[in-house]
Amino acid sequence: MSPLLVQGSGTRDGSGGGAHRGGREHCRGSHRLPGSAAGRTADRVERRLTLVDLGLDERIHTEFVLAQAICRTLADEFQAAELDPLLPYSPYVEGWRERREQCPQRFRRQGLPIGRLNTALDMLHISRPGGEDTLTTFGEFEPQQRDLEPDEVRSGPGAARDLFSEFDPVTRPVLWRVLVIQVLLYWCFQNVVFGQGLPDPDELKNTFIASSMHASLLGALESRPDAEAAENLTTTINVAMSYFTDRLTPALRRVQALAAANRTPSLAHSDQALRGVSRQV
Image (cartoon, rainbow, N blue to C red; front, top):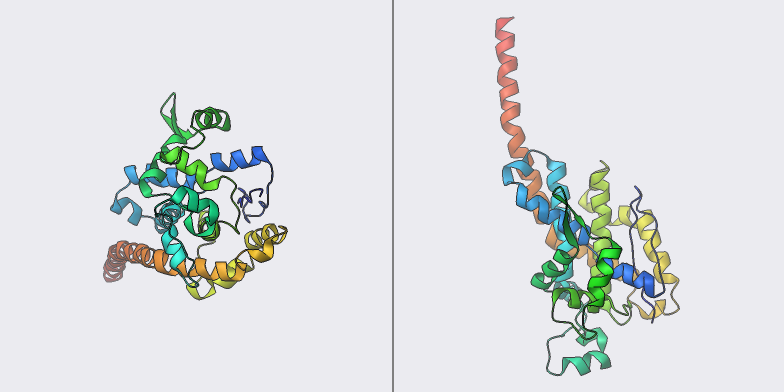
């Protein structure tokens, strides 16, 4: 079954992406491990910023929280499987190599432990002359993949390759949920980056469904001949919203609280200054 790679473009409205078929497109999908750019960016920012730094700018702090979440969803596939409606998922079983061929929906690993995720992301990161930190190019990445043994699934790079090899939303329903969650989070990230901010929690679902990114996602899924066998996109979107509420809402509330706390002294100082001017007048 040819892979379906959901890609968000760099455009402001997030349009683009869809069902890309063919071996080379599949390799490019492996190169741009979903969450890789956001994950490496969050990691580099995390090394340099303190809580005080983030508190000085609510927008930057929000971007940082979203970037971290985008990356870490790949290590949170058990949470995605357990959200209602529950998907049977037990990849750690005796005889897993044989059983994952018999029933990949349940027994094939559809996420990456955080340690292997970090190792895979490290492979995509390079320091260039002059100290510039950036992602590897496709030309730099491809030889690294060729050096891996065909059945290597234990290392970070090998596990990442295996994760998306012959990906299909029907046979990898848990990973499909993870990718849809990432689409939602990338859409939120784009809104914040371009100054639109996040919709109110009560409006998040409806606003996302009305977006061009959702339209691209729906079109890509419906274009597949086996679309009816995949989880209904409305159900998957509901799962993504539940994940956002459970994982992101508490962190975003802390961002707002920290920003409000940092604004309060400035407001008090301004009020005192205004009273002083009034007395002088």
